[in-house]
Length: 152
Image (tube, rainbow, N blue to C red; front, side, top):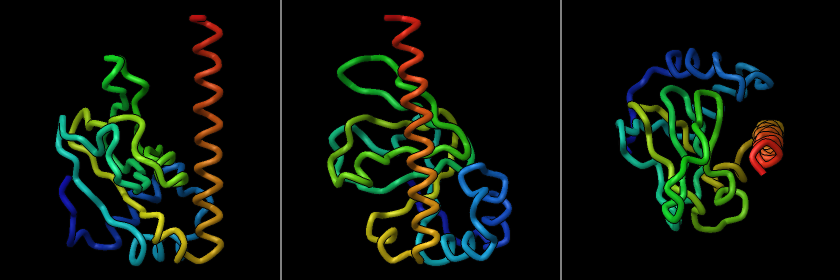
């Protein structure tokens, strides 16, 4: 993963303004998040964002590209994460090692937020991030339940 620097704020704003993850954020809140509390990374095709058992605790929001999530013990994909979706919430919230691996299926740009940055964010932004994580996790649970019903 390569840290991306020197992308003008206006370009970063253009990217996140298109994504559903940030739809409840005001322009000011988006700017605060980008300027002070997050980093952009380029994950090249077939490179890992993280591997199972890593101690990386960051939350990653996919801005462009796609990431496949899988477990090494089962050679099956657990799903594909696309722009506006996130990965890494388990380690981010529970301060535990990664339970899955995540690899870019093409050149992918992610926005990374550390748990420490989350604690320093203004309350309103922190709550919106938490709301999106809860919403995203409940969507995943619904998809998983449907999958179990159809294939159980």
